[in-house]
Length: 139
Image 1 (tube, rainbow, N blue to C red):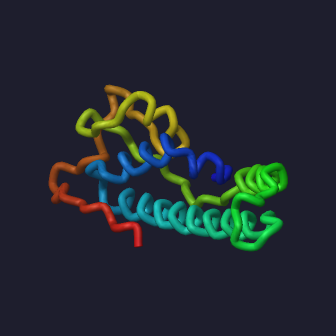
Image 2: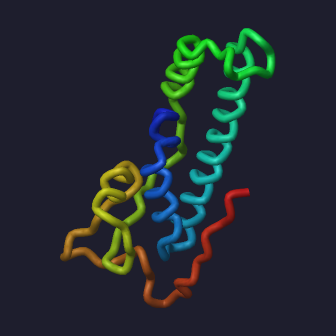
């Protein structure tokens, strides 16, 4: 799946993605989601480093941000935010009534989630397993 960095850095998307990672999920889905979350954290850190480097590069007086060429910096930001990220994601998380997400969050997470028809079983929370999956930390 290809996502633009702008999407990943969008605060509502970040909140929705974190909300999804905090839902009770089967271990394999939780693991895959944790890998994507770690990738997003790395990309955000790399973006921040590039942003700071751009600020330094576009200040006419080194260290004095009041001398920032805002237009040149804006052009850098637009280019950075347009970067495409290759996200390894093949299987969607099945949403269930046991999960708590807003409609807006689900809309933002559309590439990552799906809903079962009422006639299908609920594989997201197997009956015979322990459902206490703790989300991985961001480090």
